[in-house]
Image (cartoon, rainbow, N blue to C red; front, side, top):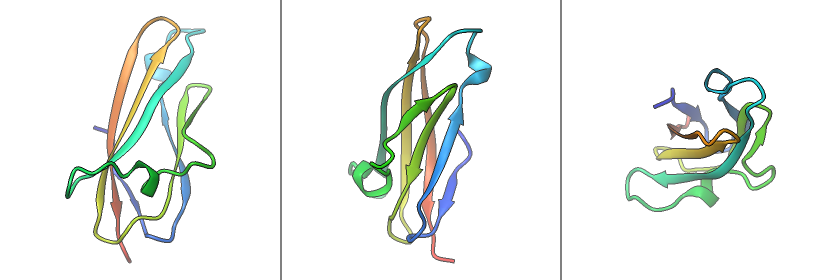
Amino acid sequence: MLPPITKQPWEEFDCSIDFAPDLAAGETLVLDSFTAVNLANGADSTALVIGALPAPQISGTKLVFRVIDGTAGQEHKLTGKVHTSAGQKFEVDLVLFIVEQ
């Protein structure tokens, strides 16, 4: 699991996960999915904490996404799934903490 992201409810900002160490020269990435689940109740929270503009996307060797909104005290598991032009598949997980500071 990757290090967590911590944000306040009002904040919106871009994040990225770099797959460069896992890729051979010339190998490219394709995004399969990027989702969020509320850890308290297991509900899909993708639309609540992952921005649609810009939508999660691949930029070079990185999976880029924007975290948005949320309610103080919530924790969400973010999961990204990608595959490569060489047939490799990667799944990454990280936790998003929503805190009021």
